[in-house]
Image (tube, rainbow, N blue to C red; front, side, top):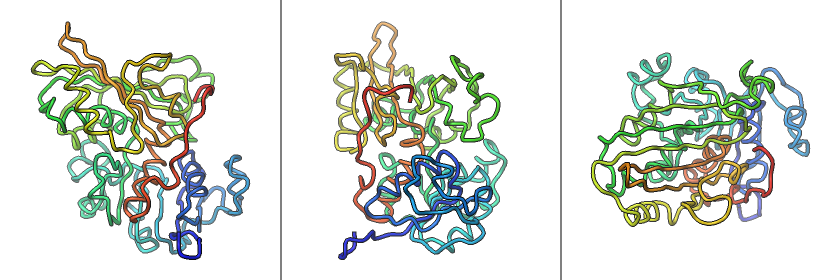
Length: 351
């Protein structure tokens, strides 16, 4: 905070009516260093924020037209894919730091966007963007003016596998099979027919058996190809990644503990949960719902020469809005955990 106890930075949220926009507004409203100056929406202009997000009825803020952007320190873009790349000049003119929560600036090259998306209209800016996951890219985030929040499925997978590469347990040519199960909020507020309650209830539905776009992020940041499948399951919040890893040589439990403790021991939002006692013996989305925490764990299967790695996040938080605010804290030189240090709830229903 400033010397007079007031927030030190201003922020706006472009696209504030969706699930992610609502989470950003919730986090910023409770953040000691941010004052929310603006939240935009074409469809809800002049409506109160509480009209769309009932948990934010206490906010004295109305949605405004996105064509009339206020000048702020940080602009969070919670817009569909393709919007930020088209409006990046306006966003950068309005804010010193732009944090994009779509996929528009996650990848490094135009060729990747041609392969995985529908091309890119501003490829010359890709090299300026920094990936928002601080556990992976903290040093490069400091002072960044374009920040790209990671995809939730990629985030869960990277969090689980990263220590194995950093510690040299894996070298990149191993076989890795990843199965991710995600909640309905991943589809957004307009998720369509497949996300309606009658269609979603009770399912374990493989909706991306192969070719999921988040594979590109995993390949880029870990330097490894993975066999990647995503299932839709009956929870609202959460992404749970189970990675089956077949290392080229022997690996001990000691090697695994050393790798994961070495990587995450000092991380404020990562907890190791690896086969302890009680009901929650491995990472569980329900245990981190509503928080910016990630749980990571593992099990060794020596008979099959296999490692099983588990990771769980709240897709709306660590996989989206929480990661974005965490990265903004780092980019602006604020206390890294500011506005994000709250714990989850237990017991709680379907997250």
